[in-house]
Length: 385
Image 1: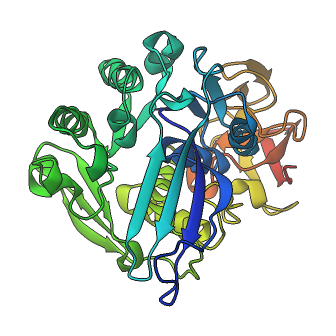
Image 2: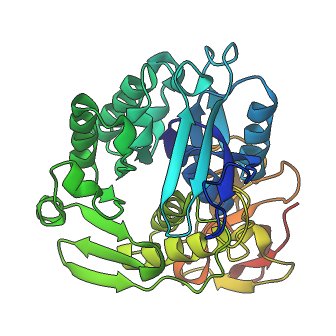
């Protein structure tokens, strides 16, 4: 299970053209569901990863918009109990023709920073992966302390930790920089953009020397994967960008979803690149349908037979039951790994029997049958609502 703790934000955006002058007359579009942690959670959820987000969301129209996008990705959202009396955080983002972005954040005193350590419950101990966006450490208390609490607890429990530094120069105080550097030091996977590690006094060489994977993104130039075993360049997927907001967070969500299924760092980076390319092709950072993800696969996209003895005779499936629910079958025991996106929309989904032949999380109906001498399981993919 992937756990993310952090802010949600309603974003208003505008793109200035070369002849727009100061931009005073250029209107903003929005609101759009946003916030770096929320974007990563949305992407991972859309791509089939069992995802839990602990966040503060106001009880207003902007909060309702954010909830609807998280529900669309089947993200399990654990809302801070203290957030409902505060407004949803907001940000106004201006894109300039030279690529420069100007941010006006309205986060202080909003629902976004209201997350308490008690809101975490036992999620850090049950997560197999924890992802931290550096912005959640920079926007204020009690959110920042709660994120660090989750990080230390998940790390101690053996979860994989990833950190996207997401450095915001306008709020990067010395104490905040020290806290962010501490988080990066604890991470097994780091997703920096250009200059972020240097701003924290860290280096790729130092992180990989300590065993970390550093996956640095650079927009249209692609990504660079540095591991203790070597360095690889991942070209950016072809895209027709219309809105690049949240591309790095989308990349991280795509990487994590793939890595949680057993992908190598290079394979996971390619998955992140694909997700980012699809995200920037639409307006709004949490709007992409991710047609290459399992939620868009059509009926009978894959069928197959696994004969007993050729693979581990355990079919791990999901159905609209809590993770951990089990059902005996002819091939062993089927265990619910994560919820299907829409309860009742599919009987179950193949999680892993022959991992190299499946994208774990595919929406499938599963039929068990017994034939003399052989037992087999037939898979037929379906479509989620």
